[in-house]
Amino acid sequence: MACVAKLALLSLLVVVNLAEAKKVGFFTNFLMKSGSAEYDGEFVVRWLEDASVLAGRPGVFLSPNQSAVYYCCNAAQIQSDGSFETIIKPDTAYGKNLTAPLKARGVEVYFVVGLDEQCVMNECWKTNPAGLNRMISLAISQDFDGWIVDYEPTTKPYTSQHAELYGRFLAAVSVAMHGVGKKSGFCASNWGIVDVNHFAKPYASSGVDIVSNMGSYGFPGAMAPLQNYLVNAIRHMSPLGGAKAISSDVGTMMVPPYKPPIDFNWQPNTLSEFLTFVTSNGVEQVTAWRADLDENYPANATQPWFFQTLASFLD
Image (tube, rainbow, N blue to C red; front, side, top):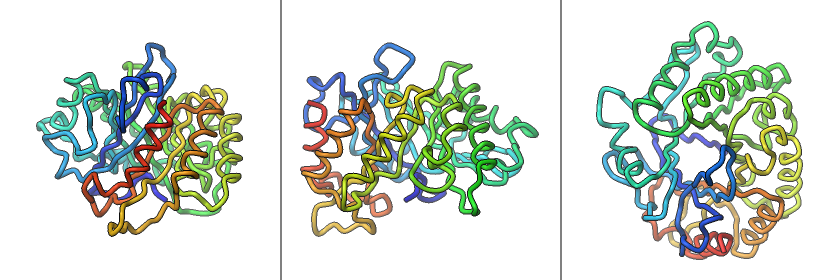
């Protein structure tokens, strides 16, 4: 399952704060910095919308209590030569139309950036730093709070050298973003080059703020694989703060007759059990990947119990 679905799609990702549970109510979606440099007491819920729907107005899942939003997917891309391409044009109102209504309410805004495999293998950010510099400039000019890197190469075998090179890129992004008072993160999983348990060292030393685990999108039929992966990831990512840096991701569930291409197989009891395990291990961020990403169903197409389970988690 990809964190980035397709090039032309821009999506809305929203975050919910555990520490503000009594203020949240039903299914508030936001991410709040709790006054320190590290993420503390957060619950992350990502809802994805098409760019044409979002441009100029907040998305349908927004509520008055949000404190952060993530826009995805492939709104921006680092190309093989290190150049940077984006649909967020600094000389137009497009980017600020997506950010300004949220920033005016004190909501943090993040964007996802894709990455070409050849760029990683050739360390293009060193030979052509202009692309990375443009990323930083755009975050400043469009007034959003950070970049989340999504890199899902298909070339096999996945090697330690490959992971080391990707870790260097993440570190370069982190240094640059932190240098201007902003944040960085990346999409991790339980497969391939982004398996933070198999390739732990380069990612643990990258300095990122958010490690978003795509590997728990769907319920695999047993809880143990999800639990074991999370426990090991917390241990391996300890240099980043361990549980404080990790976001556990879950896929949303639809109300019949809405039928998205992917059934993430959650039920109220299994989702509740997983979220209880997540919080008992100190993880305070959980990301919900919208199952109807391409279909763009209305908000009431998502199962009420899904929202209710998240609300119970906040309590």
